[in-house]
Image 1: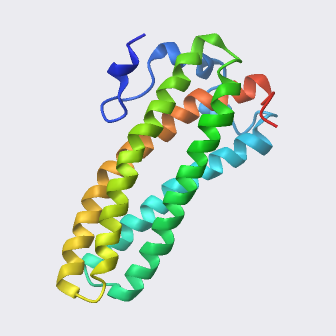
Image 2: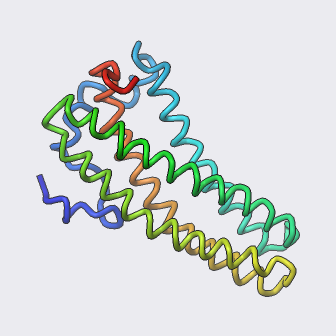
Length: 192
């Protein structure tokens, strides 16, 4: 398996095969039919979908602000609510994973233990993305009453969101490919 340093979130195209061993026994297209899907797995995946949805709404709103299809004040209010929700929920989700889920799940199958280090490194990499996103969002909110400046700041936010969305999507997919199979295999033992 490549070294973790070679698997940086910004550069990787997916998990290495050595970390996809359980995915062969628990492929994505069978997750929803698995008896262990309801409950923790369904909830956890719904949180991931919420992050994807929030990112999509924030990006769409930036486009609407740039095209003047949404007023500056309305845009600032939506961005504050959606963006604040994204940051708070994503940080809380990562803390629970890093401090509870990952330590428990890594003990279930030694073949994928290094994957949890990779996911933890992703969380640290995303801290910088979240900081850059917050700066860009706050920049747009601050100029809500200046139509020309708002277009520029919304464009900055859209550009920031493109990288953030790409890396968050990569992380979420890799995390799901690693974690869902181990939860389905173990029944989520120790996570309750």
